[in-house]
Image (cartoon, rainbow, N blue to C red):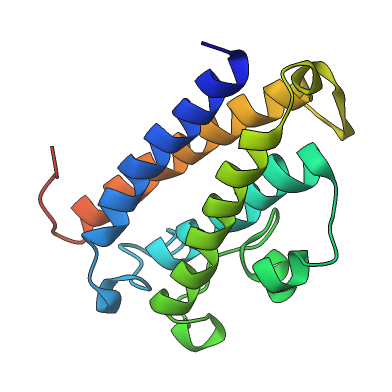
Length: 166
């Protein structure tokens, strides 16, 4: 199996896990913060969409003119690096709207990675990142980063009274 297929498989496996978690959160719970200063599911899912775009699309193939259709510009300020979750749900898109970005960014990632050459994985990425230097590293970090946030979603679910899924 190629390195590309292995890393794509990891990204897909983690996404199935994350999707299972968020599929089991009622819309009314998406903006609840279990304690002051703690994040909420809406921010986590929006953040994952932004980061998957940045790691798996922008860093791998560069920006495309159609990216604005894939990821609204305000997502970076709402969910990107340095943003802070707010308990005010009305500043965010609805859970359904967040999913209409989260899911297509993932499908675009799958599509783009299916076309990526094996030799392209060794190319360096810019700008610099402390966790990786190559496209393969960016993709590996994307899977690890999503798993980190899936753990946070799982913890939020538990703090809101949900039972574990597994």
